[in-house]
Amino acid sequence: MDYQVVVNTQEQYSIWPRGRDLPAGWTAEGTAGTKDECLARIEEVWVDMRPRSLREQMAATAAVPGDGN
Image (cartoon, rainbow, N blue to C red; front, side, top):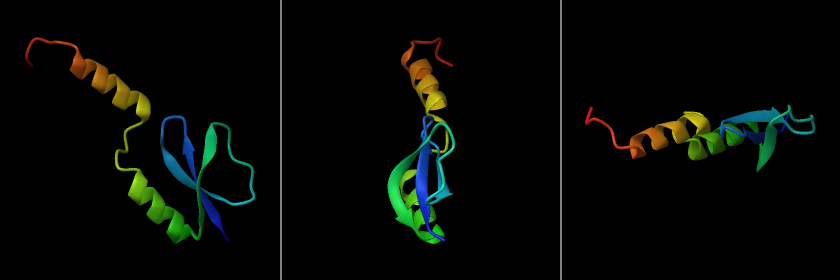
């Protein structure tokens, strides 16, 4: 069975069987192949497991001058 790498709006990655409709909110990343090939691609590109919204919130909080804590 062939798979493809998919990504959602939160920049979270997964694999999905090729030829099957993607679930809502997911798009093809462009990589397809065996399960192992797709998992290797995910390991290569998904270096920060936090959802995008959390990363953005943390960056915004860090940019706001605080009380030094």
